[in-house]
Image 1 (tube, one colour):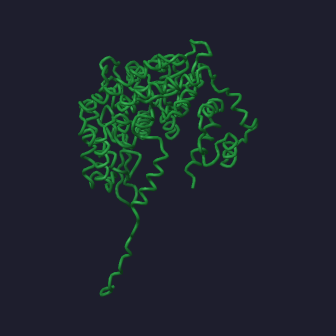
Image 2 (image 1 turned 180 degrees about the vertical axis):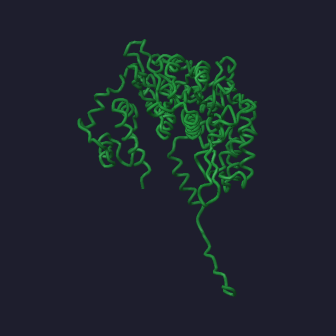
Image 3 (image 1 turned 45 degrees about the vertical axis):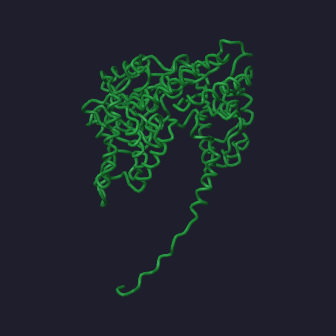
Length: 499
């Protein structure tokens, strides 16, 4: 090989402007992520400088692999600072510890995995003759159902009140037993913005030696700064018996997706979260999270935004969101035919039909959301749910309020009033009518072709495109058995991204 000339490398050329223009065209079809017109999924601080700071932080960490903080020591430094700030606002004591994860779902999965492993190690589940249980109100985030399925537990959902959106502590405590690996309560829950009875449940869990997790994925980075935070019942790691807590920075931490923290009350508990092995011929593998190789970009963005805002900045943004939330609650209360469901805590709310008024004056929340969408405002429709106790939760429309919402109120409130006026008196979609598009006899197993044909019959063909009006689709979701509609939704989403 010596003396041979090196081969000339072929120069890689590309038209970056054309590539980015194509990406811009694709993005133009998305719902807007800024400006407050989408009241779910996006968390807009309303401060463009924060977006630019986050983008610059991500760019600087673009090539870094978060897998090994001993090689990329910046990862350890950034995570240490983010976790320290989180523990400071969420009540972590001197023995508390935490981890930065890729988002709320991973935080929830790891909380369940840790609790399950510690439950097995304690011997409490020995001789139970079945899998352990994960006990939670039915309003607990769906990530906990996923976690139960993945980690071999049974999700034991406790019915909640349709008036308050939560349940009495006794309803949870009555289900405790040696086969319970974990109890989950929310601060607050996503569907109804309800604060679960954290204190009483955590105390009962502590007395029984049961892990208790607080899901504060949506509340963890704003409730500590909420204007009336002192009036809220205790809900974080300061509560005796709370063993872990999750809180998403890509919500009210205003960072890019996806970054969250999972905090544990003790270091030893947090160590049980890890996976480690040297039982292979490669490098020793030690993972605190489900992911191995991972981007450090969102972590860097979170660190930068915490540095920029500090407690004072988060407090100011929380005040903006709080003012907007109070205005929207009052606005909904003033719309005949609608009501705010339960007693919302923090910057979110669910809106239901006010059944105290005559049917001709009622407003169906799903029709209302469809009408608002035609005016350029995206609200999130939530199906009703029949609970195990026979009590049905109403179908609602969810609004997530962010700091930028305050600047949009002059347009948003009249749009919500006009949308209600446009559909007042229109009855909810008749489930029997929408079921007419479903064959009376469904195949025992819906393969991809059968599920696709059924979707096409519902007008959901064409690559999985959704209908303009979502109310009939949501009625179908409510009317079909859960396994059937879940299979159809899988097919719909799979076809959306199919080549």
